[in-house]
Amino acid sequence: MKKLTLFLVIYACVFSACAPKRDLVYFSNLAQQTNGEKIQSQEVKIQQNDLLSITVNSLNQESNVLFAVNSRVSSADNSYKLEGYRVAKDGTINLPVAGNIRVEGLSIEQAQGVISKELDKYVKKPVVDVQLVNFKVTVIGEVNRPSNFTVQGDNINLLEALGMAGDMTVYGKRENVLIIRQQDGRRVMKRLNLNEQDVMNSPFFYLKQNDIVYVEPDKSKAIEYSTGTRVMPVVVASISAVAVLITAVLNR
Image 1 (tube, rainbow, N blue to C red):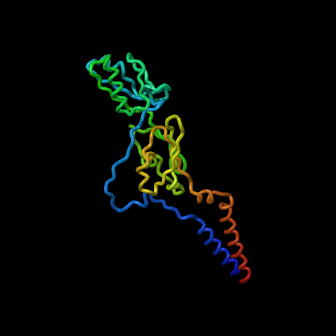
Image 2: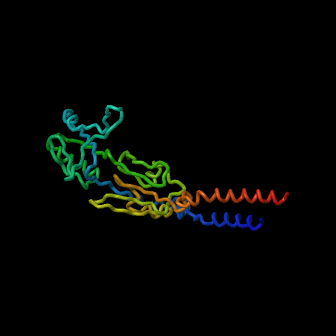
Image 3: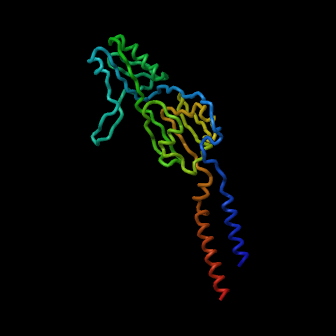
């Protein structure tokens, strides 16, 4: 009987020791005080299939109305769909009067300058404002609310995206977050370690439109949810119950 009890104790100790030790703290190697490092954010470049909201202000009110496109249009079911000037496969947008203007590969500020220069031929002193309407990122894997997220503006970093997704679960591997990006017609993938301070200097720390963030689960989740592991507590409980019953019978 003592041997059986000893076996159960040893089994419980060994099983608990199998769980790997993990660092759940972001930037765990960060010093208590930093010297205020320069932010390495990157400008978002306009890509094919982007949707642009373009506002033109000039001395001619009729011209302003001509170029206006509402970025949010209500549909029959009271939901909203995005509207704007779509960047075509050849990298251009088609504006009234001005025609096709190439904007692919330009930053938002550069696009404003190019469009303003083109419209200056038809409109007196135009002031152009360009916004990226369909800037979205996708966060999946070991987060609390995996989903697609539409971003207001054109600047979001990895921590902000994870915050929108409700942060990682305890099973999320902070040391191995995968970023999937479409870049120059190619799919580029990069793994980031959020336990390290230097990750903030990575060009992938600031996300771009249509980026996918995948948080990989730790092996402990696979172990916990495997069939054998789920059955084992029942087996141990059954053995314990039998041991108690035998002890009670022998002590009579």
